[in-house]
Length: 640
View 1 (cartoon, rainbow, N blue to C red):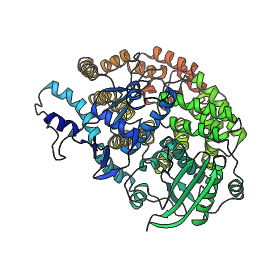
View 2: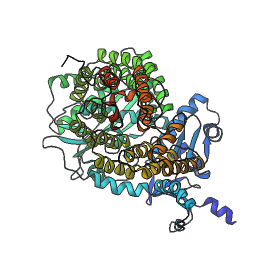
View 3: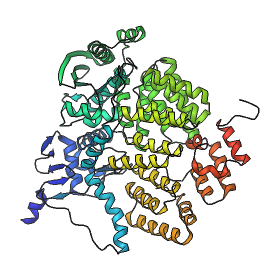
């Protein structure tokens, strides 16, 4: 009897409570909408905490009768809805960890029974080395459990910043609600939200700023009031909407809210077929421009008056590609490329899909899907096609700038493309990010790079990659104290974002704080899912090497690890990373050889060689100067 009662008791984690019998999810006592397959997946994961639940197990238990293709699409959509309900993210998981091509694992601490039950007290045997090592793992686990409450406090502090300059108002598009009978339409509704953000972002760059999708989507299924959301995002207006799709017929309802007094200042409904969905978006944008008295150029008015029809099948493939891309991992990137390719196969004149395809190819290197030589020519072809079809497409220009910087080393061309992208859509947070880290920082224009990163954060305050990248920007500027503050803030907001812990480890080595670097190295490896026992043994090895041989011992161990395939993101693994290890070990010849190989392979981080602090001992070497000239970071002799 007792075991049955325990089995059916509610699960509690973070600020959530889930009843496995009724399948009800509540957050701080308020019910969160979660039904169907997402609720069933949550129940299944909670039954097996810290265990791998394979995709095959989920198919057998929850998707009997579906084909594998239907199951794959449905599972991805269900996991995305579940993460949205929990405020979770694939690239910085608090609750659900994705194991590529395998399945999922519940990683957050939880408990059953009365809410007042206390968490087991920590072991107080401070002198025990075993307890100290175990505490590293426990700290990562505990961080996951407290991250919701902590993030609220930190985020509130971060977002209490001065309002934008007078004359420029800020607007957020809240995630549109899916009123369709099919939950499978979620990708379409989310895609509508992102397209609406893009549409509004290009209306009047000087007069209107629009919050980026990453931060806007945090409020899907949120119980917060519009006043709270507006305050957290620092916006004057909110756009809410809903979408109902039945076959090829679509009904969209939208309303514009004045945040200060929560007044509905405009609302309307639109009916169209799937091919005219861009017309609906244009009409909404035009209505909003009128309501907030936004001045539009003749060119923008013309664009809004004559939106093109889209091929419904191509548009569907594009939106499914966007959903896969938003997973921000290797598997999601591969799926997004397939969807975007399918979209342009259906409609060879689909400029937006070509731009998205260029982005997926160009950034596939970041997740380890392709090498630069494989990815960049394909990215260049897709971006060129996008611009040829629609020169007003900001993303086509920003990706062209990215390619010119990281592959062609054409710095004037990169500058033109980035500036064109920002002129077309200054509300694109990733265009600010790329302009900062792919152009301004490599050329040593650090103050401008930092300003661009802060612009990106204003537009996308809940994007962990952007928050963390500001820390890297401070490192390149040799502003280590500010880098430390930024990394620590990002870690507090996103405790399980492994890249941030890896970057903290790098920073501590620049500061000569190797004990702390080892702690962060350990946390990064735990957060990417490495075996805790193996990680703690590695930690022991690093600390013993540091004690016996000083910093050299630390770098020798990292060199031994460089060949492993399960290293954290941004560990020292590819040639430019190996060059850093060799410099730290005083092996300049090997470092130069590694950099020469990195140049031949056009590895992504070659644009950073001129600003990477670790390369300071190489700067006077003629071979290093040759590499800088090859990358275009210093002029050829006799030129200006």
